[in-house]
Length: 135
Length: 135
DNA sequence: TAATTGGTTAGCCATAGAGCTAACTATAAT
DNA sequence: ATTATAGTTAGCTCTATGGCTAACCAATTA
Image (cartoon, rainbow over all chains, first blue to last red; front, side, top):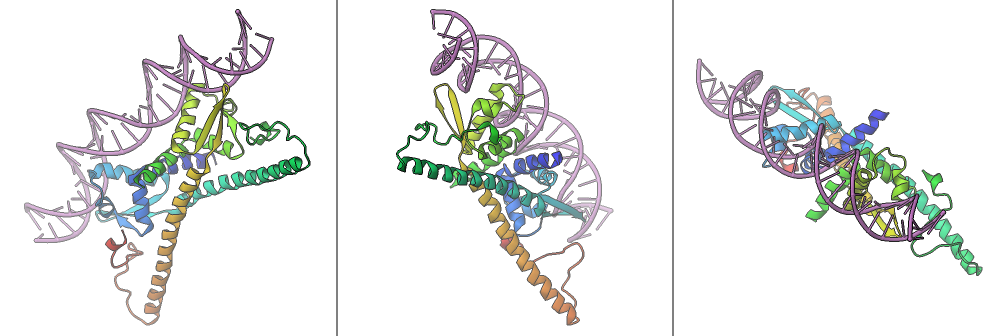
């Protein structure tokens, strides 16, 4: 489980490089040999191989050698895992937005009732009473 | 547009660090000051501030100083942008899977008709005729 | 006015990352 | 049996990253 976290480290680190993202994109369209993958890049093969290796370590790519050619394919679990992380964050984010909406609604009602909204200045746009409790 | 690509670099690089992912997760639950954000970490403040800075450069976080306290909030566009990247790859990946399904269907029909499937060995599971065309 | 708090700047260090060349291995092709 | 192809290994450079301490503002608070 703690291992899963470091797996996310590796996946995001792998995707932080444009060459590696291009490789992943290419592999989304179907498997390919190292040579085929390397062709569009002006990079020396050993440098390119390092990228392949990083992708394999991250779990994004699997490869298998048959004869003298190594064939690479996408291993989508890692990709999906990273996507899940975003969706999870968005869920939290949107839940907060919902709470914010209801908060704003309450403010509007208070203003409609002529009350002073309790200390909301321009700077502190959203300041829930117990900020510490949300961690 | 090429700038968008390097923006993805920065977003993924930012998210590759567990400290920074934790900060983003924390900010999903609502804005916070640098001090509040730093508190759970055993890191020296200047080190922590570097993480905040990386997050700001990536566009994931915005901050504003009022008095002597700097308040940070999530800036969700960058997050959504990265999520989009995954969804786009998955769309391509799934389209290919669909094509693969129809390919397998065709194979099955051929086998049912007693034909030899044209050169599909155990190793080359999916080998569309024109692989180069898919780039 | 003096002391505290909340960040910030500057500068150092150690490791990791991305690139290279050169030399090597093993499988195909001639 | 050579030669060519497809990767691989080893080892180097250079820069970026993540961490630290020490010293330094600039707002609050006492």
